[in-house]
Length: 362
Image (cartoon, rainbow, N blue to C red; front, side):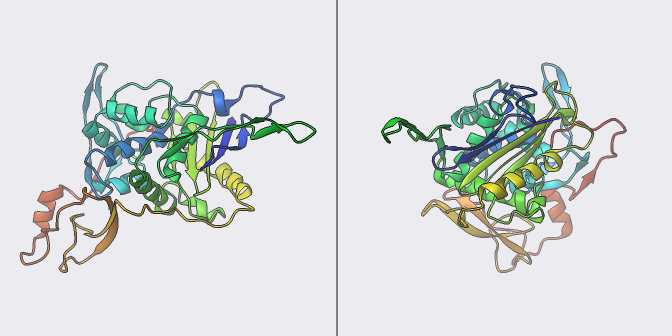
């Protein structure tokens, strides 16, 4: 088993940590910048980023149900990690719980090529095919590129170019070489903030919810990833100051072992790294843009704008101009449970777990 760790200053791109493997004397291959691996579900935030700017929002409801997709290789029946189906789910919840079928259906709504365009915009340069499995990370990335891409979420949509050496001075103090900060705006700050807020939910309630319990209690956001057959385990996470990516795997691309996910293998390393990196930094919070973000109270049943008659509500953020309609389930005409069932379908559908080994990305 090997690991790679990359940590960058969010605003400048300065390299704060770079670990390419277990032991440099044993193997000179630098996995942080040279290993080309499948990202699994750590690619999903890029799909959802494209979706936020193509008519969807965090409260958009996707029906988590069995789907069959026709491909040139034949029919593909993707599964969730636990072989269950949850019925209607918001995009926010689908990201927090890393639900494959939600991500795949979102990708099909916006088109795989759209997701690829956003991936390229965020600096990913390796192989990507415009196929449905792209939603669950069937492409190729290197840890440095994927970590840099996530840094744009924390940096108001600005992508910074990483650099290793700040400056070189001679014995007289004369500066011989000095790095220049290279920044390119690749996302609207409002889109970056919404994605940051959604990825914060992954840490609070989702697949990365172990992070606070491991001792890291600062404002943090990120995404786990696990590729087919548990051969790659990822966590790419960030605070307002630092973005850090951790990959764990085997060079020969064989399985790490059944159940070894990004949450199991990568998050403990990420927490230890980030505790050290933040030791002398002040507490900070993610900054909301001055305009372009709307906060609304939604009905928990319909996921539409709540009325005074809605029994349970929650707040959600939206891009201005991309807000949902008003709830019609509550108010003057009380709807029945059957009406809600007709609106969304069954509230939970469960499939008998397969006896075969689970290999869904997570």
